[in-house]
Image (cartoon, helix red, strand yellow):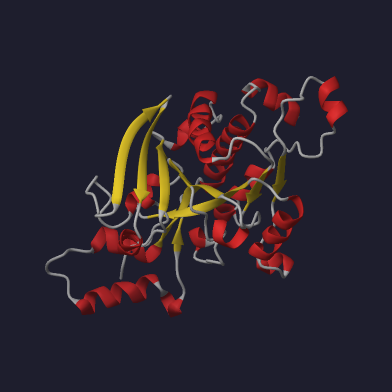
Length: 299
């Protein structure tokens, strides 16, 4: 049995602020939120903690209720962090990963529903409406292999090759180690993402190496792996035999099938998280617009 998490802040030897060689940790306040930046600087460190080389930024929310109305202050704080990870100019492709029909995996597609897509706006129309400063943005919810018969990466690579964006923002549901982090943590990373990793259906990674452009990932943990939860709750460094640990593994992997744990109010949690992330993306990409103006344009 072991620990499975998509959050860098929960990775081995990082949680609790204990530095791993080749990893830098910085905690700071940004607007209304507290942030922890974890920078994995070497391949050795990446291998030790199980995360690719890159910068991971975690925003802490005090409780799921903080996501209730995607408050502007919180969205603006996240937008500021996202803006620093993106190139200053050029088209941005926003991709919502996941399966809209499975609630814990629906975060990405729900975010896309509220992203302000502007790439199709014509120059004259933008000038007449006073929106000439809008940054070109395209959005895509590619679905999953079982729905389309195509790998998510295949679809995204095709779109990237056609529209040639300056960067890709990929949103996906994540898995956490701790139940207390579900719906209360937002992670940004500049090293891409593996679609489906949050629900134990990991596909080929989306990164600068595979797409040819920077890939910024964003996500909120919506599930905890059952085996990880059992390990976290029941494991004791001393006095726990291999036999008893194997019994726990079998209990949480009946017939070899993995179990994912999610809260009863997951519908509200995912919907609220999607509202917060979409507003943060809109504010990051369109800094000349207010939250009220963005909401009006989306109506």
